Image 1 (spheres, rainbow, N blue to C red):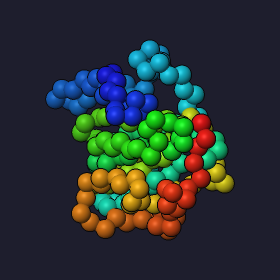
Image 2: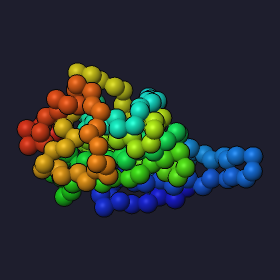
Image 3: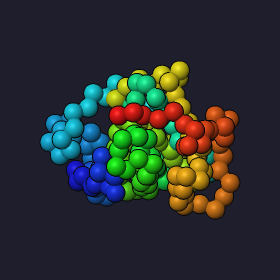
Image 4: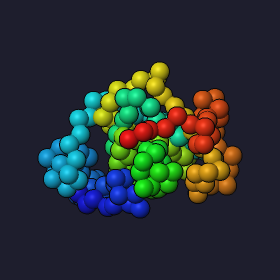
Length: 182
């Protein structure tokens, strides 16, 4: 796998080596030894999640203020634009974001470390999204920042009105959000 650093050094794009021919393809979606060797990270993944969303669905910006989750995400059907937002007050990249197009065709994965908010929007007809987390879902600690926060100024690559859950539509503004004191 190839590890690509983003403008926020802790957020990584992982490009696996894909073996394909006229029969189909094969790749290792995760190998703990290679992960440690190439990223320098030791992660204990404890939960795998799978979601399917229709075109225009935007989920996020989600995070857990306690039991913070690192997330290794990928798309197995369709295409999304995936975003990580640095929510660590003492970080030199606090309040900055990076985004990546993830699709079933490009096989890319995105590493969003603990201390970051996470969001994605579906750009294809539908998308199936897989993610591994380093801690368990804890609804009592879950927080949400509104997707179009003016201070974050995320450059979303769409012109439509996104489909939001009630929780996402009622998200907090970044300036009022409970954030990490790392």
